[in-house]
Length: 545
Ligand SMILES: Cc1ncc(C[n+]2csc(CCOP(=O)(O)OP(=O)(O)O)c2C)c(N)n1
Ligand SMILES: [Mg+2]
Image 1 (cartoon, rainbow, N blue to C red):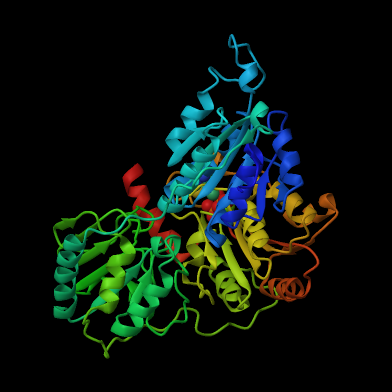
Image 2: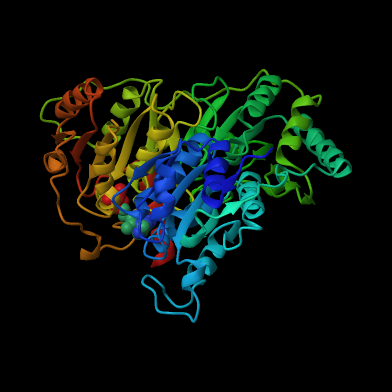
């Protein structure tokens, strides 16, 4: 006998079956009934101050544990997670967006119900653009099948999905039928053989092949396969900023982050002088490629992602990424012995000096040595992200940053999501003052759920990334006493930092203080910036003027 379900119990059952243990959101009257069902379930509801915070938290949760979920009310809440869902779509992070909605029985004669924008399906139409599958659960006959369908799509494409739940459907009984089988389709065997044949010949003929490991290897669970390929071939490997930490960064074959003109010279030279580039699951996006300063020659490239395989100028369709990498791993690939890996950055930690103002470079050097096996680094776009490029992350998948879509305000709520998913990790959050002012209030949620991230606010008095492009008063932000936020929240520890020795003291205290979050307000010179940002903004400013 199949278990009797209601629409909501089936949806909750499905979330649990996919490993979701926390759901983020803000309730409203159109979704209160479903919140009560959630409260009575195994899934923990994490209330955020604002829906955008919930959306970013769910995105980070998905990146860390495979699937995330956010639950909001109709339009006033739903439209606030449009941006975070867009980011999850762009960066392939599977988030289930559940939105309450007016009941099917309330929609007769189109009354002007609160939160309605234009038509009852306005929000649905928007989310159709932002997700890979969407549904309105307005029919108990099809509800289970619809839920199965959208979850399968999230799993297969690693992208967000949208489920709208009219409030009168929550307790409707449903019959769960046979589950639709999801998963990935098989590769076309002939095309796969042909592509592998061409790729293997190119790789074996090359003198200095290099792998660039992209973020899809993480999203599609192919990191172990990558390690096997590395082990077998001994080919050196770089990551991109979006895929940073796709493999452990102290791996003996790891070169560092490759990002065109933005990365370290040694990595740039090694990659760009290679006679065979093997790009696996890489997003060919502007920031990922150093704003197109990357010099990657297609004529020397084997490029495989979840959509297609391109070898030199030949396209192969219908190949599953895992089958391609698996094929390379099994093939007779020549083992390399002569790769000379550049030294890691930040070899020696400078002694902290009293009265010496903290610079961006010093800050990252010091933070790099602060990391341990339990750290997960979460960086907001801005110099927080660029400065973090050269940090050495100890374990795989322990660096999160929206390096393609680059929405500010990700990092603080992402630490809520990441630490809910992985309580064994302590987030080190790197955030600009501008970004902090967008979603920093989620520190309140972090306090409420007793999490203990360490927040480093890079306080350079405004939108530092934009100043070298085009400056004006519009790049200033109001000065806050970030270190005094714990006074307002009644939780957390704050530190104001201007000099190297103050930074030292604060970090040592923060390391010991695990009862609550710690926030370090690090004053930086307005003109100071990381080397990577210096290079990026010079390139961008040439295009704007
Ligand atoms: C939501 C959002 N709004 C605006 C931007 C455009 N933007 C890119 S960088 C930047 C400045 C960020 O300032 P801050 O967080 O202080 O970091 P900094 O550049 O100073 O390192 C802005 C406004 C964006 N990326 N995301
Ligand atoms: Mg700033």
